[in-house]
Structures are given as C-alpha cells and as structure tokens.
Amino acid sequence: MTMRVFIITFALFAISCGSDSSSRRSVSEFDGSAAYQYLIAQCDLGPRVPNTLAHQQALALIARTFDSLGIAVEKQDFQVKDPYSSDTLHLTNVIGRFNPNKSNRLLFCAHWDSRPRSEMDADSQKQTQPLPGANDGASGTAVLLQLAKELAALHVERGVDLVFLDGEDWGESGDLDYYCLGAKEFARRADAKVYDYSVVLDMVGDKSQRFFKEEYSVRYEGKLVDKVWARAAHLGMSTTFDARISQPIYDDHLPLLAASIRTMDIIDFDYPWWHTTQDTPDKCSPESLGRIGKLVLSLVVDPL
Ligand SMILES: [Zn+2]
Image: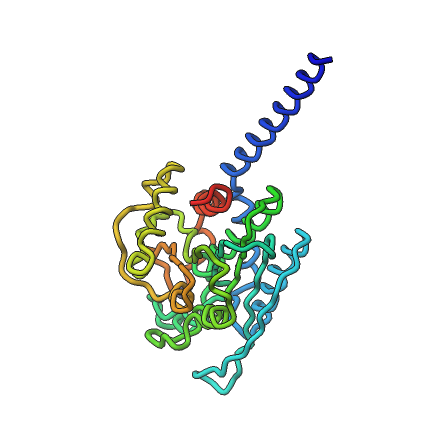
C-alpha cells in the first residue's frame, strides 16, 4: 500500500516535471517562420495606410487572429483631422488582453499602420508613394500576432496586453504632432498603474538585425533596458543586442512614457530601406523575427 502510494506520487512528480520541461522547450522555440508568414500576409494586402482598403483588411487580419485563439479584442476607434488634406483619418488601436483581471501586467506594443509616403527613396518619383512597410510596421505586428498564439498555447497565467497601435507613421518629416497618433490615444485612455512595464517593438525584422539601446529609453528607463539586454545576453543574443546607445528616436514609447507607463523601445534603426519603397519582405527574415520573439516570450514566462 505504502509502496503503491509512493509509485503513484513518483509518477505524478515525473509527469509534472515532464510538462514543465516541455513548456520551457516551447519557449525556446518561438516560431519565427510563422511570424514571417504574418509579415508576408500584411505586405500582400499592400501598404496599410489609414483610410485605405488594405488598412481595413489588416485590421481584420489582426482581429481574426485573436478570434481564432478565442480572445476577444478591444478596438479603440478614434478620428484625427488630417493636417495635410481635408480628410478625417479613421484610426483604430487593437488590444488583445491575456488574463484581463490580473494586475502587474506586461504591455507589448507595435504599430500596424504603414507610412503614406517614402520620402527617403533615392528615386524622387517614388517619394510620394506609400511604404510597403515590411520592417517598418509589419515586423513588430507579426511578432505580436505570433506571440499571441504562443501565449495562448502555453496558457500563460500572467496578465499581458498586446497592443497594435495605429497612425504611428502619419506625420511628415519633423512634424511630431502627427506621429504616434495611436500611442497618444492609447496613453490617454490607459490605466498606467496596472502595468509593470512596457516594450515597444519597431523595425525588428531586418535580416542583418542589430539593436542598440535607444537613447530615450536609456534616459528614462535605463534599468529596464539593462535588464532586457541582460536577458538577451542570457539567451545567447549578445551580438544582436549591442550594449552601445543609439541616437534618440521619437517613437510610440514617448507618449506612453509621458503617461507614466514605464516603457522602452526596441528598434533597429540601422536599416538602409527605412522610409523607401524598398522596405519589402526580402529585407527581413524568419530568424530575426524568431530572435526578438524568443526574447519577448521569455519576458512573459520568466519575470525580469
Ligand atoms: Zn516609419
């Protein structure tokens, strides 16, 4: 009798160890190829410029992905008067919440819109064309869509919000009032105190991926940046996550920081096709998406 109890107890212990190691194996295997398919799917729609059909279709793609996971999304619809035309911009942030009742939440953000112009293109004829946005827009969105699938499969217990921000790239060069429109709207409505911290992903898919510590992030949340970089090193990514500091970059983290949400930006700004019509999927890779995906997944599974 005693022996039988022992055997059953031992068997249960072995099962629980087995499931633990298999979930850890899953964590190390963030599916970069599946994420890359999400990047392609977005680019296949065409530039996701606000007030276009492709923009609506990309919104449907994000919502559909969460629907398939059984997770309802919250849509934040808002309008902005376009300063460059007589139009009104119809914009939407999409929020997918895991374990919505939990506090001490993590927030991951990426922008899902693409830029309406390619002012850095070497061909002046193309500078008024919209951006394919494979890296600038689709890459971060692709990582968050795949992260949603991975979090659902792992049945994570942590409170996590994945936020797809609209209107990041609307402004003309230097017109900061019309960049980060979705981040400003999200920040205006957010309850900052529910978040432990937040990470913005932007331009994360470059084939020759390398991240520097972004200067504003270091200035305002230096300890957070150091911890995330240490985690990347622990995961064997110290070549990709270079300890040097980049130029300051105005991105979606700044409105969140202004709303007292501890936020850092992970952005690879060394990208020759930035704001050109050459920002296409062939410049990105599944391996790069897999690397950044593995890092963010580890932030959820193993708290900093
Ligand atoms: Zn951009």
